[in-house]
Image (cartoon, rainbow, N blue to C red; front, top):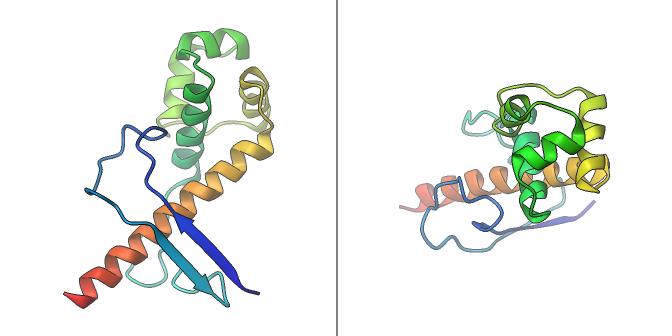
Length: 136
């Protein structure tokens, strides 16, 4: 099975990330999508799902032009707890995730796909940095 992944840094969606300068577009073609999987080569740990999920939820909230308080009111969750979820400090139950997604007007599957994209982006960025380091 042939895969192709395009990796882009998008500071508009993830302003809390530190930029590495002008990040290039990275394209990855592979017969095996697990080739060079993060954590398998250079001992780099994979990001935690709760952190990635929080990042994705925050991105959807920002795209929806909602404040944390507005989302917490609609989703019936405390602003403090929602903040902890967005920062990746707390695990989220499937029921609470569904409530937050419903309040955002998105499907849970859309948020999970965003998580997959974020995790793939981070894996590709790590692989790219390792390739650059190997050429220096």
